[in-house]
Length: 153
Image (cartoon, rainbow, N blue to C red; front, top):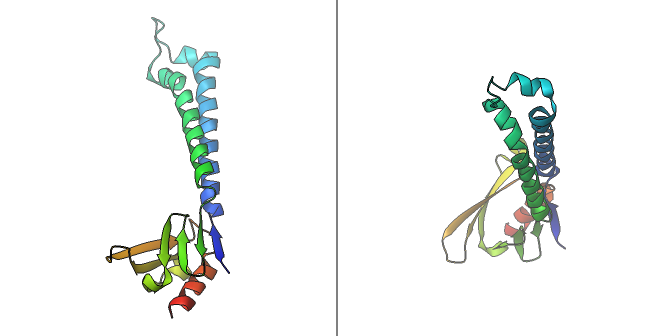
């Protein structure tokens, strides 16, 4: 039986907030830079040249919308990431696989207050490695931690 910890709502909601902030800022700057006659008149000199504020408001909206698109694309890429405590190993984001027999210790001293625990293990080359998992990145880490402790004890 595998226990899964999907990408946390905290991380997804932060992406939604950043995307929304980029879109709102782009709309605001585009309005001030192209549509608001009083703003344009206030930030234009006698020769008709825009000052730095008006130039920024006219040039930044495409970059802000591009940033929102990049954030949305990255969110789509990481949406399916999860930590899976399978029968023989811990699989993180579908890429990193840590066999239970390679795990040497688990430091869970900060799990109750900060939601973070650290796994110390031997990697494939035989060297020491450390991986930190946080509840800000993945939901449902409590049952995974309990399963890991039961497997290595």
